[in-house]
Image (cartoon, rainbow, N blue to C red; front, side, top):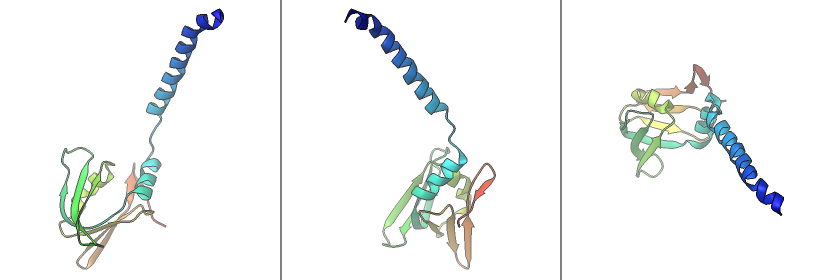
Amino acid sequence: MQLSEQLKPYLIAFGMIILSILILYKVTSKYTCDDGANYFKDHVKFNLILTKKENPNKGREVDLYGIDLYNNEPTDFHDENGWIKENIDKFIKSDTLIKEKGKYSIIIKRTNKVITIPYECDEKRYIDK
C-alpha cells in the first residue's frame, strides 16, 4: 500500500502528459478539404427562395433568409463553413437555392437559367455523381 501512495504523484503526472499529448494531437490534426466537403455533402440541406443574405461579422458566417419551397413559410439557413461565403455574391434576391443532402453542389434557379455551384476547396472541385 505504501508503494502505491509513493507512485500516485507519478501516475497522475504520467496521465496528465498522455492527456496533453492526445489533446495536442487532436488540435493539430489537419481538417482536410475532403472533411469539409463531405460534411457539406452529408449534413447541409436547404430549399428556399432567397429574400435576404448577410455576412454579419464579415468572417466565415453567412445567413440566408427566404421562403421554404415546400411549405411557403419563412425559413433561414446559417453557415460557418466559409465556402458559401466565397459564393454569396452569386446569389441574388428571388433566386431559388437548393442544396440537397448527399450532394456537393448548390443549385441556383433563376428565370430561364439554372446555375450549379460545386463545392470547391484548394482548387479541388467536388462533383456530384
